[in-house]
Amino acid sequence: MSYGVSERILGERNSGQLALGGIVLLLLLPLVLPPFQTTLLAETLIFAVFATAFNLLYGYTGLLSFGHAMFVAMSGYTVAKVVTVVAPALGFPELFGGAAVLVTWAFALVLGVLMATLLAVFIGYLSVQLEEIYFAMITLSFSMAIFVIATQDTIGEALASFGIGNGVITNGSDGITFVMGDVNLFGFEFALVNIRDPMFYYVLTVIVFSLAMYALWRVVNSPFGMVCQAIRENPGRARALGIDVTRHSWMTFIVSGAFSGMAGALLIPLATNVNPQYAHWTFSAEPVIMTVIGGPYSFFGPLVGAFAYEYIRWFISQFPLLEQYWQFSFGVLLLVVVLFFDNGVSGGVERLRERLEERGEDEGGELTAD
Image (tube, rainbow, N blue to C red; front, top):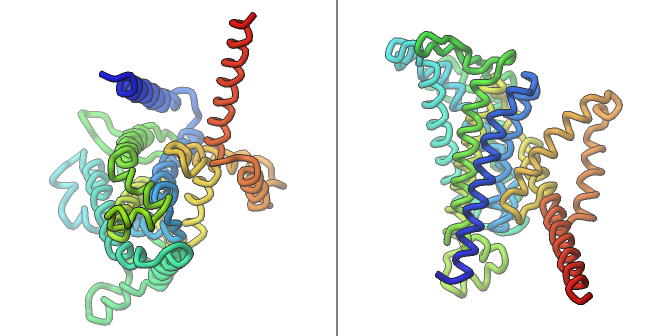
């Protein structure tokens, strides 16, 4: 076995051990954190999945989407409808007894991801026919179209005109509010989503977060991911090598939309409400900001950016004056990152590590010479 292969295997093993240690730490943190901080951490992990899924399209393929919120909204409305309408209609409480709420959540998660994927198939096919700023604008247009449809409850009104339903699907700007019920397993009864004790849903979030991040990591480190990076660096040369750039971009868009839908299916039960704002362009801007802060050319950059974004916002909220102008505070932060950090915070950390290693090698060389 060559030295290069051995080094790569050792690096992957160390990365795996580090990731496993991180997961164990995440599972232990609620033992020392208050309930609010546990909920905030769960929300941050969900946004990390959302930002990493977005970055598969942006940082790895070079396609900037301003409309990724539409996948969160599609998945969120699907989850809300499954919990409030579909599961009771299918008789889940009678079929699964005390585990009905848990089964409903799992079913809603799968169905939410499926609906987001189907939306990505359709919108992605149309969007990847365009490039650069035109791609960004068409994704923004689709997202805002879904925002208007949800706000005006267009689908509900259309079905009602044919005598189907009562004209309410999205419930307009109020959205759909729901609370996951109680789970009763082996004599233990607890709420799936409980603000006073969010431990159980937090553990579920950590499990889904870990599986999603591992799946995305495998994608970007596969031949598929290498082709994505080739398209990002030089689409013309990629075409010359025989790569169908449009088709590959479409596949990437679908994968990105599916994992964004997974984030939405996790987020909405925690928020207990889904409304048209989840499809608005301002919500689409959040993974963009997280990725820019963390670093788009590093796999863990969006994860770092999600933690920075969520916890800086929480810190700002502790001071009324800063909270009143929190957009200005974030604008200053974003300006500092863009001006002084190459590839965001993760790039800055990497550069610092390299400089420390170079300084250590120089000092070691001087000692040897002496």
